[in-house]
Length: 149
Image 1 (cartoon, helix red, strand yellow):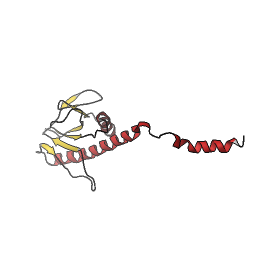
Image 2 (cartoon, helix red, strand yellow; image 1 turned 120 degrees about the vertical axis):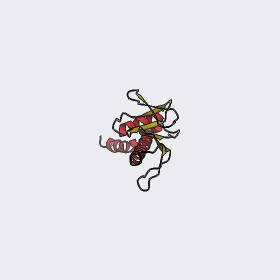
Image 3 (cartoon, rainbow, N blue to C red; image 1 turned 60 degrees about the vertical axis):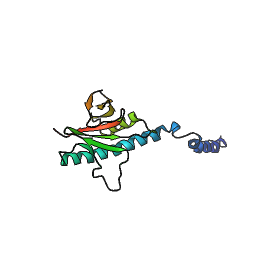
Image 4 (cartoon, rainbow, N blue to C red; image 1 turned 180 degrees about the vertical axis):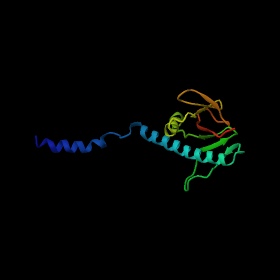
């Protein structure tokens, strides 16, 4: 029995290297979707603050004042009298629905998060839709906040 213990210990130590920790890179893709969603939410807060400080803004908004050493790539915002929409151009390596769902989850289930469809925001949780202030390709992840008007 004592001769078997070193063998079992050696096998136990080698176990983590015998199989991939992330088969199919699913965890990496989910982390990338969460990271892109988090960047979009930061951008949205900055765009919303800019529009609230400049009530007459209409059309493209950006780039707003962002945290230092932070750049926004593939993220943009647009506004009209009713609200601000921030949207993300999702790279081909990620799922658009995954980014939209991550935005909703990270925002705390905010009801105006979803995907663009026929220039409307469609909420993935309840199916409700809202007209967007700018033209967006279908399935683009979007977050929308009302500004008044």
